[in-house]
Amino acid sequence: MKTRLYFIVPGPLSTRTGGYIYDRRMIEGLRALGQKIDVVELSGAYPFPFAADIARANAAFAAIPNNSLVVIDGLALGALPDIAERHAHRLDLVALVHHPLADETGLSNDHRDALMRSETRALTHAPHVIVTSAFTRRRLAACNVPPERISVCVPGVDAAALARGSGSDTLVLLCPASLTPRKGHADLFAALADLLHLNWRLICAGNPTLDPAHAVSLTRMIARLGLETRIEMRGEASETEMHALYAGADLFVLASHYEGYGMVVTEAVARGLPIVTTSGGALVDTVPRAAALIVPPGDVAGLREVLRLVISDSALRVKLAEGSREARAHLADWNRAAETFARALKGARP
Image (cartoon, rainbow, N blue to C red; front, side, top):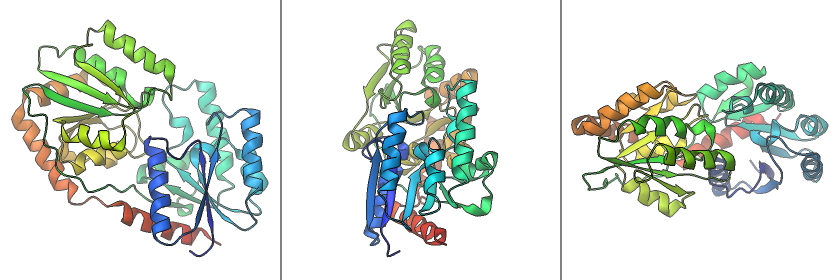
C-alpha cells in the first residue's frame, strides 16, 4: 500500500483496553511495513455520542481528502451511521469490528436494539469489514454483513518468558480485565466467596473508569462478602506492571460473559499459565482446551467447582500449564498479524 491511510479511533489511542491495544499494534505494524498513517482520535461518549460529539466527528471525516482509505474502529463507526452514509461516496471505508456493539453486557433492551439498528446501518456503508475473530465474522450475520465482505485478522502476541509463579503456599490468581459488567468480576467474586477454606488470593488489574458505578459496586461486593484480605484491586496496570503480574501468577482467571477475541488469554498462554475461563463469545475458539477449565458464562456454580478443583489440585495445574506451553508454540506474533491486516486492506480497495 502506497497511499496514506487514515485510522479513526474513539478516544485516545493510548487507552489500555484490548481493542485499543489491537488498534495501536496494527498501526505500529503497518508503519513498520512502510504504510503512512494519520491517526484521528475522536472525542466523545462512544458508543452513545452526544450531538456535539457527532458534529466533531463529522468535521474530522470532512477533513480527510477524497479517495482516501479509512479504517474506522467499530466502537465509533457503529454509532455514526449518518456520517458513514454522508462520506461513503468519497472515502474507501473499512470497518474494524472487535465485537458487535449490541453484544455488550449490561445494556437495556432499548439500548441494545438501538445499537443493533445503528451498527447494521453503518456497516452497509463500509464495503469491507475487518474482524478480530472467526466468531465475530459469524456474529456479523446478525448485522446483515455478507461473509465475503469480511476479513479475519486475529491479534498477535509478544514472546514472553514462562511465568515463574508466586513461589508461595498461597496460590496467586490473576484477572486482567477492565471493571465492566461484561468481564464477569461479580461472578468470579461470588464463586470465590465459597472457597475461603482454600489458600488463594486474587489480583484484579483493570481500568475502573470505563464504568465507574460498576467499579464501585464491585468494591462494595468485596466488602460484603468479606473478601478484603483475599482480593487486591490494582486498577489499570502499565505494560511493565502487567509483565510482572503475569510472571508472578500461578493461575489465570477470566469470567467474561463475552469476548470478541480475548487477547489476555493469549497473553496467559504465552506465559504457559493454567487457565480458568468461560466459553463467552470468541473465547469458545480462542482458549486452548488442553490449557483451560472452561464453564459457560454466568455459571457461578460451575465456576466455583472448577476453581475449587484447580486451586486444590497441583497436579491438575501442572497438566493445564503443560497444555498452555504446548499451545504457546503456535501463537502468531504481532508482525504476522500486521501482515494479515495489510493484505486485508490491499483487498479492500476497489
